[in-house]
Length: 111
Image 1: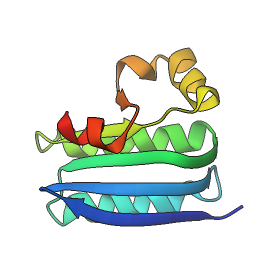
Image 2 (image 1 turned 90 degrees about the vertical axis):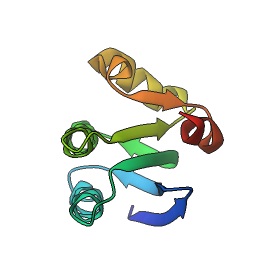
Image 3 (image 1 turned 60 degrees about the vertical axis):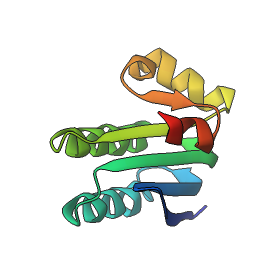
Image 4 (image 1 turned 30 degrees about the horizontal axis):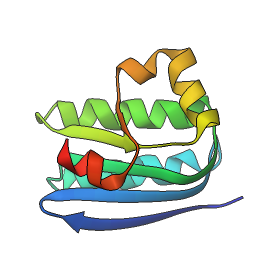
């Protein structure tokens, strides 16, 4: 399956809506998009993962890398995720304590 990204702006925060699978084959597309956004001066990101069907360790690595990039500029990276199978991955890996994970885009935007 492919990965699609929809990037939009809302009150100074960039929302990246992700759909599909984030795996070893598609993760570079997300990594490149996040790198490009940060290089362009975007340091506050919301990654909407409601359309994500699969996430592997490569995808987790890309999200952690994105978090490090924005934090280097005193920025933030928040996730929108309600899918239990994905939340379980974040809990098992301990990343649920690293990322701010919200139920809705509005909640993520509110911080």
